[in-house]
Image (cartoon, rainbow, N blue to C red; front, side):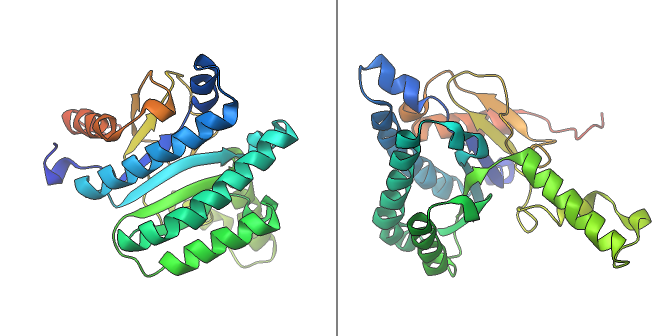
Length: 236
């Protein structure tokens, strides 16, 4: 296991391949999503063991709303079930839950359950688990730009003073450190509109296996790979 000084503070994961995992086994796509929930539990436990402070999971993208209505409904029900069943476990593990994205697009019942879990775990001080729901990074960036433009037009902000820190303060992740490590499963070599601003200097580790086959040992392997790298941030 990596030394404490080389542990990423923030790990972000693109959980890809649930549908293909199910298809390979002759199962409905939803079975893959259900199996993927167990991988979430394992990653939370692994992050706690490593001492990671933030774990952000790409749970439902803004583009996922374009999937068949039946699948979207099933995914929302699965999310509600996860929030209901895991709230006690999150409390026991001292894990704080947060969410980023266009949360107002979620069904009312789903949003209520999400808010309840977030409020219940708000005082927890160990790992912060961030769910990216109805999330799209381009939309996030556009919204931040609109917010700055509105303040500038109203005379509340001098455009000449806008810098990277000012811009970052208008993002959903304003009070969350940028990811140090980005993990993607299923072997795809793209970032899929996920945290485009925030992963500017993140180390990227790709796993060919599908998300339901991703376990604690894999996260430890990703952390070890991160520890072996020299982060230069554009310098020599």
